[in-house]
Image 1 (cartoon, rainbow, N blue to C red):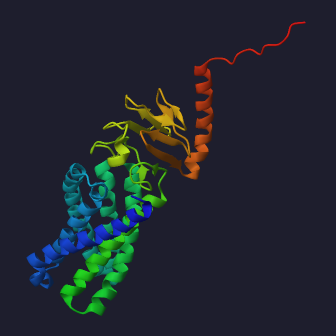
Image 2: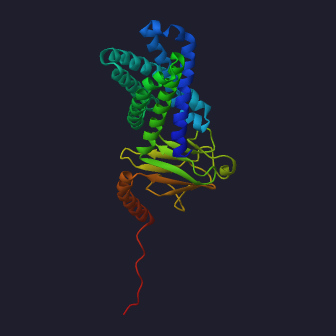
Length: 316
């Protein structure tokens, strides 16, 4: 999945998730929504519940991994509901004190909380940070459009539908956009199964192979010479990424040479396993730090190979 498609589907899934939440909430309480402020809070909470689940399940949906979808769905629902309840409750209070500005701030707070859900599920500080930024921006812009849309559409029910869908789309869009912009390192499939796919590297280990448990799956023509969990990439404490062959029979190549031990990756390295080639890329900051890592790697490889042979010359 390319980064542009990731951003696109983040917005689409955000919009549809908000629509499903609004539809269920409208059926349950839409008729009495104007009779109680608490019902309005509950409606927003239900919309946020499905929005949080959609954002949390995004990576599983894009990879067609049902185990990941089910694993993320529950925490996403719970986290989204809590985010929606707190955001809308605070938003109602701010609206009472500040008018329309308070409502916009409330949606922004809701976006903040929803943005953190995926990072909490993955236990990733980086994802929490990126989600907070993206969710806040999406909630802010969605909130700015919520009131004008309500006035243009006119019908209370339709205006709520349009408003919540736009809000969900903006939150999903900016969460995906910020994740891409602030990425530290990523992989791009160059050859093999579905070239052009990209994967952002985070704090957890990333596995590649033919198994559904792999983070980057290679099947069909890409499965030739590839084992279920062929290799792993691990993020170290110093921020570097290490490539390790998972005791595969056919081995793993790095820049044309077979690796026999965990090896530090640097910007531009090409990983080959079976018929597949995957390029490792880092941001400028990471790549600059990687120059020194490359030097250390070259020195360690030279040391492992032993001292160079002494030059031979004629004796006088």
